[in-house]
Length: 265
Ligand SMILES: C[S@@+](CC[C@H](N)C(=O)[O-])C[C@H]1O[C@@H](n2cnc3c(N)ncnc32)[C@H](O)[C@@H]1O
Image 1 (tube, rainbow, N blue to C red):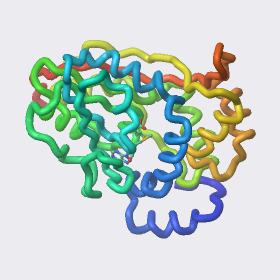
Image 2: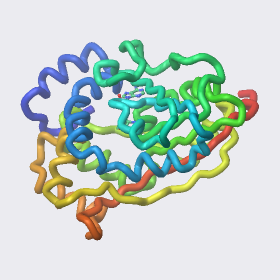
Image 3: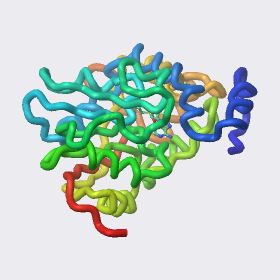
Image 4: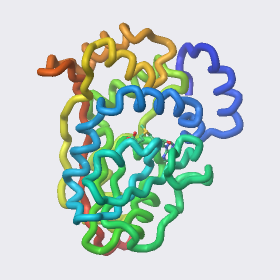
């Protein structure tokens, strides 16, 4: 990866990367900054969690898997009475999620253990998506749901992540984004796709200043200022005035699936 200028701890990152090349290393490197931003602005991505939850057809008291969960930010948006099970490959940022630095797979749950699995904004870091989808098919009970919500390869969000973020953050960004191919991968892994749509919504803030601070931290944008970041967001994604603040346009591809017999490869 040649990711332009890197400040401060870039040398430490490169040294670590030379020994361990997986994306998990990148997240261990910038995960703390991500977590700080999520805790400072816990409602900024509210819609991003509520939209997949709304598609997951949860029965009362459902057990819900969240993979990869990072700090478990989705949990607080689940309906009352649900049981949240998180799994995070970078255990140091798990905050109650299962994980011990062994990586993503296998998932740490029994067969048919959950009513629904949700995966928000993490799969674009996973190379072998079919193996993850197969494991999710193992742990979701018959009649349950898998809701995958991640960046579509043709979206402004993908261009922003692999463009502005890639050029200005501590580790670079090289997304393995979703597309129509994802639907075939799901079918091969034992899922029947019920719906797949690109859904636009906002990341919400009280002010442009908050938007800049959040994105600066979330993406660890060490080579830009929060003000420059807001200008780039305005140009590349769009910003809307909302009744109670400002909204940064964002979009995820939301795919809903239920367990089915896997096709033979
Ligand atoms: C953008 S965060 C999304 C986390 C969380 N679902 C959320 O919405 O905030 C990306 C996630 O991918 C995880 N990750 C990093 N490398 C990974 C890998 N090789 N396989 C699976 N997940 C990985 C990170 O640890 C992190 O949890």
